Length: 489
Image (cartoon, rainbow, N blue to C red; front, side, top):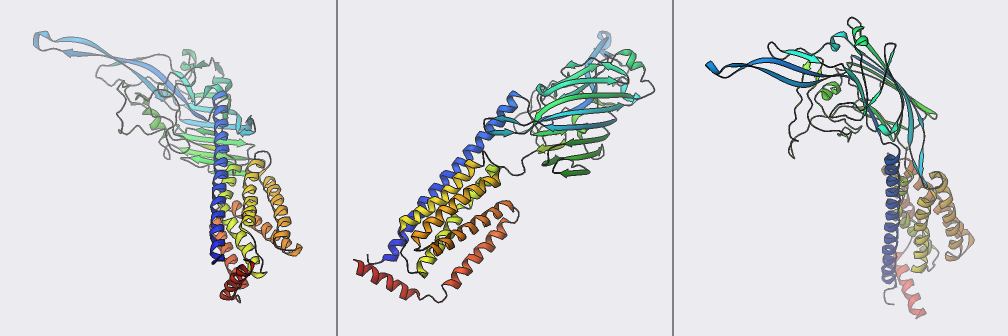
């Protein structure tokens, strides 16, 4: 060959393309396995219970206002009895929630889904003025209301277990549904007349004790004027989210505790509930809490909001603001699939650094390493990433990384002994590979500092190559390679 170095460069370019295609295939496998994990999560949510959000308790009354109105002109004028129906929904003056969750993971095959079981003690109080029938809005109007009900809405009632509702010392029968158009899922209880009569001068104090199953997330809607929420759990990796972060929190290896204290001055959840809005997910977007999105007329704190049976807004028209929530996600600190995907993204750089090391030894020791040998070394490196994702499904990520990297390092050390012509070069090559695996692991763990660490690593490698070849006469080296090729031919 007239230009042996050019021919070898072309061959190594083809090797690089083959390895890039292999890395892309591994990356597709990682995405496919992560997709199966998402399917497993959806399967558990469909068969057990999904993410849970608690709204309430809320005092609701079905009322009817009637009044006399004059219609017609002159001699045809007559008095007509007019009526309208509306719903009054009043959030409590104070809301105090103490909840404890215990992790109950569920499995679909090899995939783990973070589920939880919650026990909550919900206490709320309503002022006597909040229990009075709404004032009429029409002159000479008369408002007549049915007995009030107390309701608490949930995202998914399939997870609801034992539930008790007390007003004072009286335990009320719990009935399914909320009778609220926007938040139909949950339960309610009718407040009997004797209990209502006892609250003419003292606040109505409500206590709800419930058990609830859910997955992935737990959220609360701070709809009262004064909200205090305490949550403890045995999950050591919480991700607090929503419109308000906890004022105090403590996270340890054995779990966490958090406490929110939110007033009506800091949240518009009560107003959004009054407007009949949907419930915000923890990311701030409206969630599929269920129920109709029709605008509901409510009375919150004496403000009349009529029940409108209007058609749905056309596409492009802004919807009502959703009810603000706060809570926690029971998340894995870093998913093994996320780490595997990030490792694969460094794969091409990893292979390039290895090839640079082989080429440097080839130049320094006047060896001839065939492109097929480069290809085999590259495939061993690609296989590491495939082993990593497969082992991490059965072992902790660190253990999977150690097993996969150790196996590949031993293989490349043994192969390097024969390719580089000796035990010592093979050991040096294996040590360099082990160092690269160590650097890659640091890059995966230090996500926030990965860029600076990676750039420093490249600088060190480039500096090492430049220093190692600073006395190299590249023209003489090229001419020597050409003479060897001509003599061999």
